[in-house]
Each structure stands twice: as C-alpha cells, then as structure tokens.
Length: 407
Image (cartoon, rainbow, N blue to C red):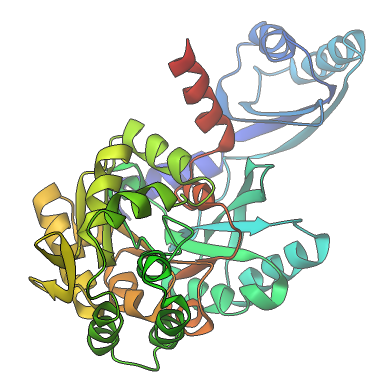
C-alpha cells in the first residue's frame, strides 16, 4: 500500500462530526459558528456554504472533540443556532468525503427557462453512464439560466456523447469539458464573422448596393447548408459585384451589426488574458475594420480585388474556405503560443466544421442542423456572451469587471 493510500485509509477511520446550519442569511453567521466550535479544540476538515434566495446552508466537517466534550459541543451549537434564529443538525461519522471517481468533467447547462424536467433528464443521463454529480453551481440567471455540474466517475468523451446529442430535445444547451488546471490557462478564442460575430452576411450587404441581393443570398444559403463547394460559390457571388464603386466599402462597414453580447464577450476575454481572433469567408475590407474596433489579436479573410476604384468581381490571395479556417486556427494558436487543446472555435456554418472539430472546444452558435450535430456543443440563444458560461465565467464576474472599469 502506498503512503497516500495509507494516509487515506487512516483518515477514513478518524471520527468526525458534520455540523449543518441553515436559516436566514446575514453577516456574522460563519464567524459565530466557528467561534463557538473553537472552544472545543476541533480541526476543520471541510467547509461548504451556499446561499439561495437569502437562505443559508453552512456545512462544517470537523474532527471529534476531546473525550467527554461531544455532548457539550452539541448542546452549545444548538443553543447558539437558536440564539441566531437558525437551525442546526449534527451527524456523527468517520473520515472525510469519499474520494471522487476518476474522470472529472464540468457540464454546463443553459436554459431559457431551465425547467425541472430538463434538469431531471440531464441528471438522469449523467447517472446512467456512471457519473456522479459532486457539485452544482449557478453561473448566470440572465439572459439565460446557466448552471455548472461537477461530475466524476465517467470519461469526459463518453459523458459528452451521452448529453450533447440530446440537448436540443431537452430544450437546453449543454457543454461538457474536462476539469483541471487547463481551464484556467491562457486560451485562444477564434470566431467566424458572418452570422456569428455579426448579425449579417457581408457579401449580401455588398450585393444590396449592387442590386443583386436576392441572387447572392440564394447561393450563400446553399453554401452554408453544405450543398455547394464554398470556393466555387464565393467566386460566383463575388463576380456579381463587378463594377461596384469602392466607396461602398465604408458604407458596408457602417451597416455591419454586431451580434448581441459580442462586445461583452471580447472585452471579458481580453481582460482575462485570452487572445481573440476571427476567420471569415467574407472580406478583409470588413474584418480589418472589426479587428481595429474590437481590439482583436488576429483576423484573416478573403480580399476583394479593387482596381481603379472599382470592384473587379474577383478575390485576391489565399482563399479562406472550410479547410482554410482550420488551418488559420492552427496558425493563430502557434503564434499565440497556445496548445490547440486550449483553443475555442465558434461558428455557425458548414464551412466552420473543420475549425470547430480542430479546436479544443467547438461551439456551434445558432447554427444549421448539420453543424449542431457535428460540433462539441451548441448555443442556440441569440447572445454571443453566453459562450462565457461555457468557460466557467459567471455573469457576476462580468458585471463586477464592468463596474470596476467604470470606476
């Protein structure tokens, strides 16, 4: 038996008391409990505290007091709790919490609303594959309800397979990632632009000025559904812009509408030291402007050829297509010094699939069915900052950081 196993075995035999305090929360309860316990020379083994709608549940796992003092400790704790208009429960036992099982994951569930039925279904699926829920924590209450389950006892990939495929049927979005130190490490987030970072399809904005919006939209929709080769569809659409005055570029930049939550997402990620980039099947004439406005670290897209102040109906340079997006994700990660496993990719169309699958976490954002089915997870709410919850960042942390900057 190893030293660690011997230590765990010995610890499991030590008599302990679980002291539970519950009632209306107010300042001083935690300090008062431990001040009361201090008189009995006990050690603290574990502490858990949660406050829900102003009601406190405080649990303290302590060593058994010296011989002959346990009865007095129990009476004193109950008396103190009554004086604070709280309730107390004390349970005898041995040792610490049982060790968590191998295979530790974090399951983030987003609902609007999050129903009891969907929560029950998620919990049942976790149990069915042998997982144990060790802890549940709310990340946000708006614009969606987001909760995080810490799960042990099952491999992350198996848990993801069991949960994510049925998420849409349950009326929730679910992300499953491995727990561990890597979640706190520096990361790179790379996003698609059209219908992800922004609400528009940039080529359709150009097409509106050229009077061919309907024709371009038809080709765009077919390409995003995976029915057409992207490069062929790109050349076909850009050809319709031939002769358009280059002054329209500035007009299109002004017409671009950011997706709700986009600024919050990027601002928060940058504060945390993340690097953020975009890759687009659209055009550098727009992505370069977005990079400057939003403080992005990386941006790459196709480039509309302009000669003598007119669009030629052609693109220049390397084509950013489905394979190109994945290639750029790898390039950005190498330049950022971030392992590919620490990257997050966000997109909505079929040409994002290679990038989503190459990333450590691929997020399908309000995506087409073929993309939702293939990505690691899907977010079907129209707020881009909900991606923050998948990274374990709470709404309270986001708002606190915003208030600090205002100060």
